[in-house]
Structures are given as structure tokens and as C-alpha cells.
Image (cartoon, rainbow, N blue to C red; front, side, top):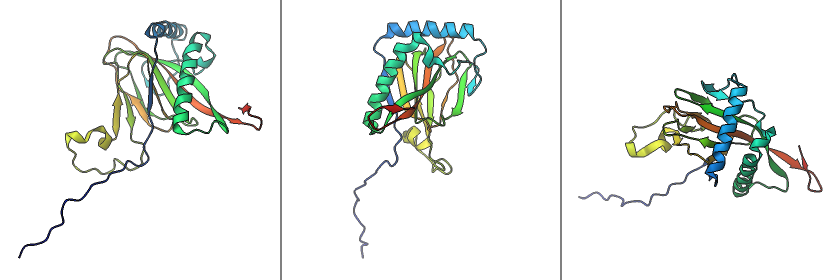
Amino acid sequence: MSEDRPGPQTLQASALFATPLWSFRHPDLNQLQSWCDHVLELECKDRAGLQLTNQGGWHSQNDLLADPALGPLFLWMATCTQQAMAEFGWDMSKATPCFNNAWAMVNREGHSVRAHLHPNSLFSGVVYLAAPEDCGAIAFLDPRSGAQVLLPPLLPAAGAYATGRILRQPQPGLMFLFPGWLWHEVERSHSSQPRICVSFNIGMRVVRAGGTAQA
């Protein structure tokens, strides 16, 4: 007597609570070099910098929004952010995006940045001004509590989405924008040339009646 077995089932899979990551590319690579030179000048004037999550390397003060030499860069970053927020579904009639702060980092051989997030900011971002080969990828970590506590054996094809660590390689002119609560870190640099970037945080200004923004 043969046993009846159910036939193949149609598999449906959904990705719940996806984390947004936007990327943009600056169109003028020549302009990037002038900003690199400016950041290196800032490093020379303030050798100590800040020691936060950076493991070696140089971290500027968090006041670069007031630096006129970087004004055109921040204008481009603001335009990109506005585009991403529109895609995200931000209601601009109630609040508008604004910069909270911005800083530069210079990583050389052996330097890295330990895992961290950006509290009190809605979104955070980074734009790479110089990114030589092997200068250290940025790693985005799975923010879901408990997602990595217990895992089955995984095939190599399962990839980073199953293991909870997504790598993105920096490139000159590339900008990433992501939620401020997303844990991330920077791998150790193995390059003899500096990796130079400008990072920033995004908050919001409430729009008052009459259409004016209130800090």
C-alpha cells in the first residue's frame, strides 16, 4: 500500500523590517581632492583631535558645519539627504531634516573604528573623499536583538544577510546614509595611503504653523 505524500509547495518569503541604506556618488572627483587637502590641513592644526570610537587615526572636532571650505560638500550632502528622506516617506510639512553635526576622519595603516551607533540622531552618513585599496570596509551589523544568538549550520551561499555583518567598500565620492540606530564599524586599514572621510548626523526641525521651521 503506497503512502500518499503531499506534492511540492509554493514557497513565499518576505523580508520584515528591512533597514534602509542609501548610496550616492559625488559627480566631481577633482573637487574631492581639494577637500582632502583641506581635511589634512585641519589635521595638522589639531593633531590630538578627538578619541571616540576611532582606534588610532584622526577624528576632527564635531564642528565642521561651520567650515566654509566644506560648504559646497554639505550642500550636496543635504540635497542627497532630502532625496532619500522623500523616498523614505518623511512628511516635510511637519518637520524638515537638518544637520546635527559633522566631522572628518583620517585613517592610516592599522587604524580602525570600533562598533557604535549614533544616538539622538535620526539618520547618519559618511562620504569618502579618499579611499585607497584595502583601506578598510565599513561593516553594518544586524540591529535585531537576538538574531545571532542561535543559528543553524549555514552554507557559504547564505552570505552576510544570514550571519549579520554586511560589508561595503569605500570609494572616492561614495556617500552612505543610514538610520542613526544602525550599529556599524570600520575594518582595519591595510593601506599605506590615508582613508579620508566626512561623517554627519541628521536631526529635524519642527515646522510651525505658517510653514517656518523651528529648531
